[in-house]
Length: 203
Length: 247
Image 1 (tube, each protein chain N blue to C red):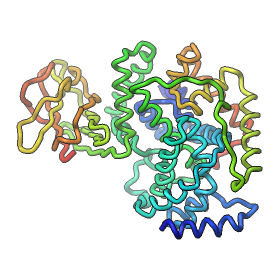
Image 2 (cartoon, rainbow over the protein chains, first blue to last red; image 1 turned 30 degrees about the vertical axis):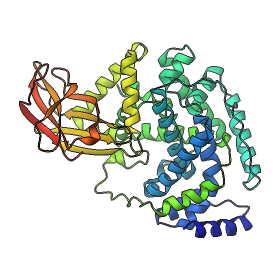
Image 3 (tube, helix red, strand yellow; image 1 turned 90 degrees about the vertical axis):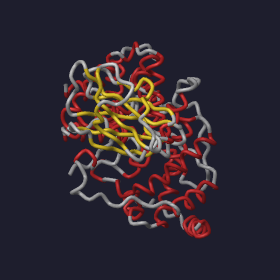
Image 4 (spheres, rainbow over the protein chains, first blue to last red; image 1 turned 45 degrees about the horizontal axis):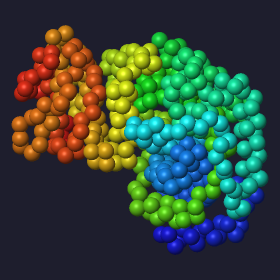
């Protein structure tokens, strides 16, 4: 199994195609049990899955463990992906975020984490193998749009998403009333949606 | 009410809600296609934030993952006849356990009411209650959690989510009809052929149709029973109204 996977990886890397594979097509193929498609999906999403989990958990070893759980979950539940509800990559990242946050909150039961505020406080090393240009453009766009938010919107969104805080915790951290935090999360995301040009196909 | 709960849409899309809130919110989405579209878009937006977190995992992870999927059975396609509307989405995973609290109709509304009450009191929750919540979440999120349900004789469901890793479980009682004001549901565990043992602090509030209890050592028991008792509970079960077995 592993050997076959490695062989495929070599093939794939030798011919990294300029047009990246469509994630939705890959997930559909994975849902049919296509392991080669899963390998390509892994290559497409793993840096962001791992990066996201690592940013939330702040522990590379744990992040690796959770990233593996997430990718196996993607394989297991590929049939549950519904393109009418959003993109395939968002589906994967939502699973990853949920798992990371579940882990963080489970650990919070015993010990409070050190809070660090700020979206860019963890270094995110690149690998030459992945499509660095795409990654950079995406980072630039996300950061540009985050900068476009009000300070409170940005804090509310990033404390929740990148650090896994519940809105009640965010309200505490920002010394802001709960309803205000709920509203800033909502209008902050709406502003991000418009800035990033996010659309979900409605059927 | 609808407008009120929809105010959570941003927190929901950011996954900044707890399991009970998520269950309540997803019930709300099931009844409101426009709200669902709104939530889908904001969740899609939130996922774009992952684009700023590029970090290449160690190369060995790829081989490990590929080996793991070779051992992992895939879920079958959802058959539309069996799927309830609110289950057609894909966000449901282990939280199915928590969502099980939000049963159909009246019970769901009751849980929702409890939930809203809790949200209002969130700022002043006792540390103990917060710990309980965190433990509940931790159990529901355990990778090995097993969820079982059984019907209650008066309508409704008992749901047991048990994790050997956490050596504990969460019992969710959701009766369609609340007991009389001077009666209460009580939880029991049964091992082997032994007599039912009362769960410590396992008596629900008098007159309450719903309750969530953490039970230590739950994976070791053979059955969980719910009985109807005089308020405050009894030493032995009076009328068993639901039993989940095996755990």
